[in-house]
Image (cartoon, rainbow, N blue to C red; front, side, top):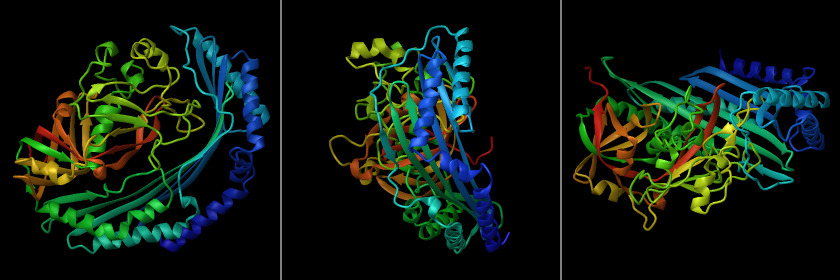
Length: 534
């Protein structure tokens, strides 16, 4: 489809949606976040749940808008602009959970759905092993929060977005040897109102933005091809200013040059190497081998059928005892970093998230929890002198999904006493590899054994970064790998990267989460050559 024809049709379709009876315009009026009508509907749902016998109830009224546009060279390969709106009611009755949801947001429907949720909870109670206990929470009577954006991406014309991607594609294809390029933009705006029978009422508007490119170079004889993704540009909880600041047009040429250089790069020799991992790569290793195995629902086996369990089991043998890494290792969990993907004012249980150390000085110190999960660690918290409190790690991807435990931003903290630079990390290596960008990976169901690739690899010899390598992947066992980290970068080297689509749960839900970290050095890691045939 030609660009102008595409834009004309897209604009007409969007205009048509706004005039459909009961369509987007109606939803916008009913679901204006935080207005008096919406609050009245939320209170009606809670009253109906209590009248039906619920000991506790909460309601979430959501409107989510997603937009994505994708291109390849000079073609538009896809465009989507969708909106979904509705509400969900979660209740506790007879010690069990019940949940029901609807896209029809009106007085009669919120009453019906609340009663349906209570009926479901009573049915679920027949199979419960013990009654659900909720950790206490601070009441927030009128909380307001919004992601720190400067430009709402949904106010930016589609034509401007398409033109930007085409310019970036052209810049990449201007590099000799670059043959193919794809690029895309993805945006989310989530308007969320939460209310509970404990008196909490919050209104939040959350934004997420992801610009990305992939450039593929092909050897002259067609015998090899190599790709370079735009991994230095992270997904962020920001607005369209993040796309402009990413400078895709100027960076596209550099990414294309990397792809071409990989064609003539030296294949890695398998063996043991010291590795320096840049933040754009290390964040994914943190995500898979630290953030996921410290989710309490995985440890308890609730995710075993889909997303897996954790090697951290039984909890009493690990919490406060297990050495995850050396003393320099501190892993912080939080939902407060401006622009990070999991940052919010309150979680989906109305809890203001706190900052806590999952790993303190190398020792496993805490786990990710919700209001239901925190009491499961009550004995541990009392022994440690900590209050039994949810860390605010509850999330649902939409009004139609029940909230459950999802990871916060999980960060490897920089060196605590000095600003270690990259040169020092590299300078202590005789035979090693510098790794930048995320690549393919695999990890077992307990987050114990894994293999990771990357985007760009450089040889390190005698304390100096040398030529490019290719076909690099490293193998790891979680405890040995993190205990092999002997130096981390300082505060000036710290960066934030993240995962835009992290799947979990049945039915599956997607979450977005950031991981901040400095570069770090790991000793004697097993490296394999992914290009060799057995």
